[in-house]
Length: 248
Picture: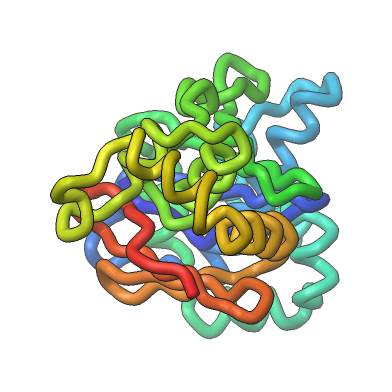
C-alpha cells in the first residue's frame, strides 16, 4: 500500500492510501495532491447525496490521465487544489511528463484492492478523531474508543494529559519509559504528584492543555518533543510505543 501526500480540507486532515504502484510510477502532483483532492471531493459528494463514490472518482481521474485529457482530470480536483494550481500549470505538468502521467493512470485504473481514505478531525481542544471512508460513508475508526493511545507522539500527549486530569496514575505509569520505572508504581506517583510536586504538575498540565491545540511536535527517529509554556516535554519510542521521558 502507498500513502499519498495528505491534505487538509475544511480543517480535516485527509490521507489517501492506495495499492502500491509500479516501481516506475510517480507520485508527484499528478498522482499525489491532485488525486487526494479528487478522491476527497468524490467522498464529499457521495456523503452529500451525489452518486459518484471515491472509487469512481479514482477511475475517472486515472482514465483522464492515461488518455491525456488534462481538462477532464483538472475538473476532478477540489477547489483548494485549483486555487493552488492553475489549469495551465496543471496541463504543463502533464504535457512535460506524458509517459509518467500515463503510467500513473494505468496503475490507478487497476488497483488490486480498494483505495483506503482516512481523515483526522481536530477539535479546538487539540483532541483528534480518526475516520475512515467505508461503505459509502465516513465511519469512526475503532481506535477512537482507546482514550489512552500511544502509537504516535500526539496521541501519547493527549492520553497523558487526559490521565493527568483524571488522576489515573495507573495509566500514567504506562507512559513512563522502562529506564525510569524501576521501583515506581501508581501509589508512589500519586503520593508525589498530589503532595510535594503538586504545584509543578498542575503547571505542567495547564501548560500542556494550552499548547496542545496548535503546538507542533518535532519528531526525529525514536525521539520527539513539544514546546509548551516555558518548558519542553520530551518523548521516546520504546517497543513501538511512545513514552513521556521528561518535562521541564
